[in-house]
Image 1 (cartoon, rainbow, N blue to C red):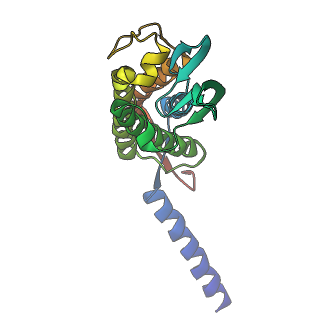
Image 2: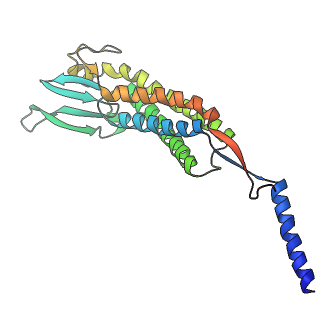
Image 3: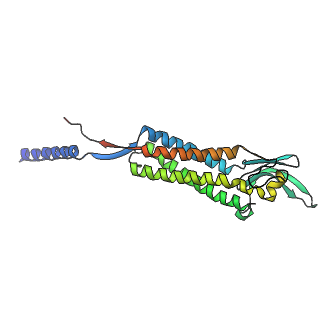
Amino acid sequence: MIRTGLNDNSSWKTELIQRARRQPTAMTRLSGVGVFWALLSLLAAVGASFGFYMPYWLQGQLNGIPVYFGVFRRCNYPRRTFNDEFEMVEQCGRYSSFTDIPSLWWQVATIAVGTGCGLAVLIALIAILAICIRGIISPFIARIAGVLQMCSGLLIGGGVAIYPHGWTSMEVQQACGNLSGSYKFGTCTFYWAFYLTAGGAALTLITAMFSCCASTPKRDRPYDDV
């Protein structure tokens, strides 16, 4: 009886090994292109988001002091004193409410770029996580991520493109020598955060093309063939 039990146990183990050989576990992992895609996605998302937050899209001058505008923030602005006079406040801050953003076009740009950056950051974090954990991103999910990245890049790029429409606002005109208009600089110039955000949008669109080759299936066999 003891020998029979040992033989049954041995047969059971042998059957498990044979099943594992016949039915290997299908897993997915990022390819070399996929790792490059994940790192590039993170770089694009961080660049676009940082540029979106910083108020250095447009540079002008007011009362001899440089002033800067973003889509929802600005630096150095006039303030009325108790003596009914104006003084320049040399600090950066956001507008107190969404409706205080001086241009409807800037409000639309804030929504578009903010949504695009949020989507880009989400995809980048998932892609980075997939470098460490296999099976997160399949070829199908990678293509979906690429489509979402394309939408993200278009949203950010669209917000950057419509930003100059807001140069007709009184605040911008005062800082641009009263010569600015829709897509007209006046005495103002683009500043570094504008280029950073635009570059992030372009890079996001480029990374979307790599998503098609980001994931490759890999079969894991727990036992080697004899």
